[in-house]
Image: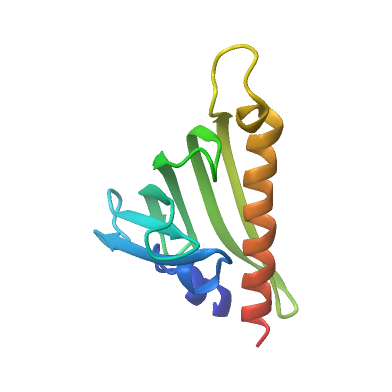
Length: 139
């Protein structure tokens, strides 16, 4: 419950994810709600996302990216699930998984838009975000 409370608001990502300067929400936690994540600093690159499903009882939501700056996140057709589960004995499991394609869909992508760059960017964001969330939950 404690971990879910930290992430239950679709736009709370600016409270726990490193590198997120701020989050601007519209529509709350209802499907169709949106958030604009500003990276780094005021006026920084933005990631636009839409909430597709939200289930507070099951502590899960699904969202997709509708627009991103490929210099910071070189992906397209990205959708993700974020789920919090009781793992017993005062333990919590957080699952953050996604499906996406590299930003350059054609053959011979430049290195900054290839498969490796896409996986590295998403994996890096997930690892740093989950580590920060864990540290915050343990306070």
